[in-house]
Image 1: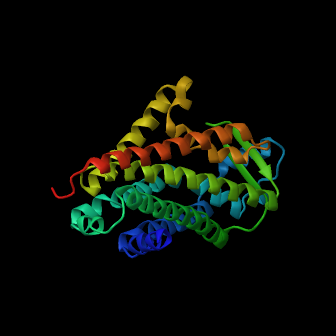
Image 2: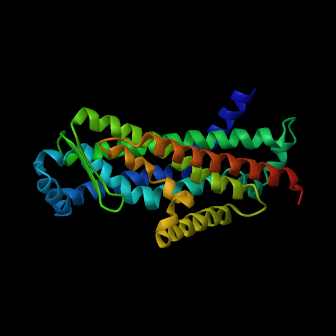
Length: 277
């Protein structure tokens, strides 16, 4: 019965047109970015860094390199937006439509209902990140060949060059960790969705807290690991030659802890709500 309830929640989630809005915008944005990478000189700084470290730049401007560089702006802007949009809808939208009272008339607990919705959100997060990675490879593959993989981020002091096979492994590992990031953001919006507020308000509250955390993280760099958004950048550490596994594990555990806390708080608030009003 629990599996059937999750399937029902997935059917409702993926039956909405707005669920596919993010997928379409991601595909269009990645195609536009890859086109600009092909016909502009935006890769010049990376080329200079590669040549300065003794690498030929041309073989490194590959599908994997371009697909990974597209992740940076998408991860900072569009991913939080779409994850928070879905998370804010999961409970608040049904309350707004008036279907929540009918659902709760069935012999299931409120906690069980929320857990099924939360797990449906995890499936959505996985699909969103999977398509993000796939779209990146497809769009970059239109203009760039397969070759070596190079990544440079001066802010996080990351530089790495790998062969195609190793680069693909690192690319996939990074996306696995990005699932945790997307689910963390979705769960934050899901928590606010359990309050007696509109879906848009839940989404805005979640995004406001995320942006506030980003601002504090950038202002107080000595304490940046105190803010949860700093741990959402940890997927880029897979592009170091030697992956700091203990740091990756620590950040993944912190994100998992926040995600579980959001579920618990949401359940507590929803348990005290009077759905009749």
